[in-house]
Image (tube, rainbow, N blue to C red; front, side):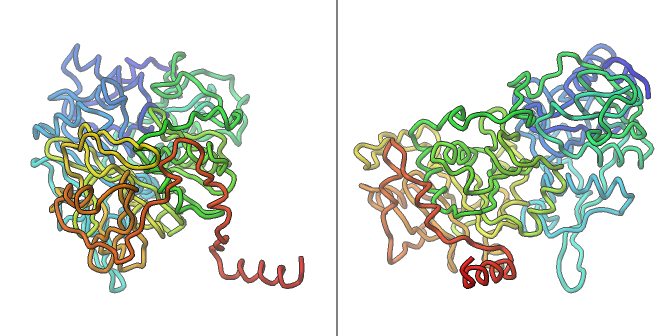
Length: 539
């Protein structure tokens, strides 16, 4: 192992190379100094050219940092990731058809790293079937010039599966907190673990170069062996960035790394408004012991609501980056967590999700059609990507989608618990046709999945004949205030009922009592039998 500078690391890259980039979203474990050095070299020398960038999660500050460093014509040929929204430069190049761009499911890319590390031919999964990832639709492609290269439909044991092929890799840019003189790397200050080990192994298997950015160096044999996440046998070069930030928004918060737990009242509550109303109604689906995922967008607010209402110890909130328990973070640092019970590697989290481990998934929606299919990925030239949405929505027992009924300057308030729409949104979110399908409601219905759509003024469910209106906000008329602002006519439940009045009052709603009053659901019949036997014995 050799210690080099970021600029020296950038010179290791040749024209046409594929760079594997670690990290998540807004700077979590992103090797920012290395990406910036590649950009500097290109602007100075017009080299390297024709690169492929591969990142499991979209990385960037939604402005100039992260993968946007690579967003130069000539520098980048292809981008492979789960989300482009964090890097507007990549969105622009893809929308203008100047690069090849794939947005594959986050869990697929995460698990694929392990298959590549083991030299296996690829990943076999049902994740993405009958969505835009399916090659019979768009094959995850986000620009016209993108070839149908990485995804195939295969039949095995009489069932359809998607087969995802390995992605190329020549150089890995990874990140940790501390490296010793032998290249062993720990991640004690990181807010997520990602898939660092699998990435390093995959690159070594491919005969590539592994470069790890860290904040500091330690003497040989002084790091705790159990804390090493990337063994030195996998590391070729170390780059030290003493100013390395934990995330783009936060230099270092010890609660993000699990160094300490914060008082629950330090978690800032959501202000009363449409987002809080949506999150409150969604949270009414919680039950004691529920294992939940909180997706991006409006649904991250459920974490702060549970803290405010005293529910964090009654349910298990998780996110796909590997946080289990506690309070997943909302806002610019989303992806991390505070007061968590465990932080595991991202591929293992997706294994659990894909296997049906989630009782409830709380996700956002951007567009919904009459069948209950959802698009969160693309709207004309606005390319978002899919993140972990497909893995999560496809495999949870119940999925609760949250969002406003319309968008664009929507102005809604509540007066004495009654809904007042002061200005309707300019854009309809319930539309006749989707540009891309990210959630297939028919597949969910076939496997007995419950799917709800919660808005600030109405609640829908996916029924046998498509979307059905089942609840409406107080003071509203179903036809005038809801259906008139949809691009199709949903079914209206015969027992259409008002949404719970507590949702629309500014004070605490007593959610903890509501949730704790529900029966505990045991995930294993044998565990349930054990508890019933103990109860019968009077213990």
